[in-house]
Image 1: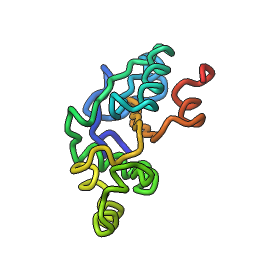
Image 2: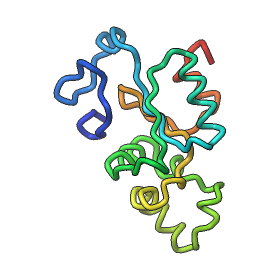
Image 3: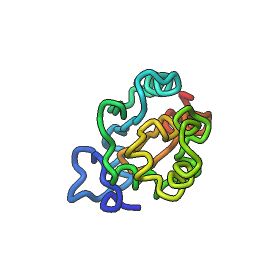
Image 4: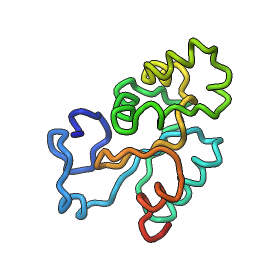
Length: 147
């Protein structure tokens, strides 16, 4: 997937929306966008750990800042609906059966109308890498040896 397929914030020096090469990335600090809810414990843990590791983190509270369909579509393309939709949360449990079916078949519209429906946090790197959640695997990916 290229930056043209998935609109996101590009680091300084990314020309014409193209992803920087590995050598160019090493010259710049990795900037991350963390999507979540400020009251979510997992989101707070991830944000705190990333910032403590010196990462440039832009936090987007999805209850305050509406998600763009293009952003959600990029997540879906990167990780799939099964990974993205939080089927264990209160939002999911409060959906009617037909709404659940619709959410799985069209996650972009479902998350746009119910922003708390996605697993948190979603972290997007300046290289357009997308992860969902804050398990040991995501910690190792974003924090490296610091995890």
